[in-house]
Length: 106
Image (tube, rainbow, N blue to C red; front, side, top):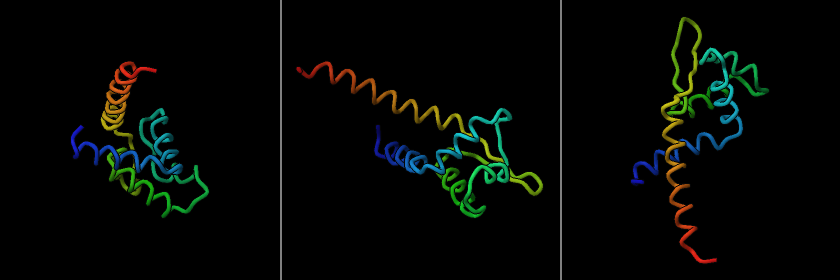
């Protein structure tokens, strides 16, 4: 993993490390329509609209979510390519760790 990849990966995990942001990402990912408007997301939380907007912005900046404005609503989608990349990096690390642990005597 390069230094740039590590910075990028850390930014995504930092965004997902917050419980509210993790729930938001889960809500969007599990939506059958593939996208959720900000109002629907906000209705799932007991925090203010501006607070939800702040969390959505952090997820967008980390590349976890994308957004599209339509009329007066903003719709959010999970960037599956980004999640695939995160999972791929973790999987590669796990494979290396598994190989290394077999080489170490007990």
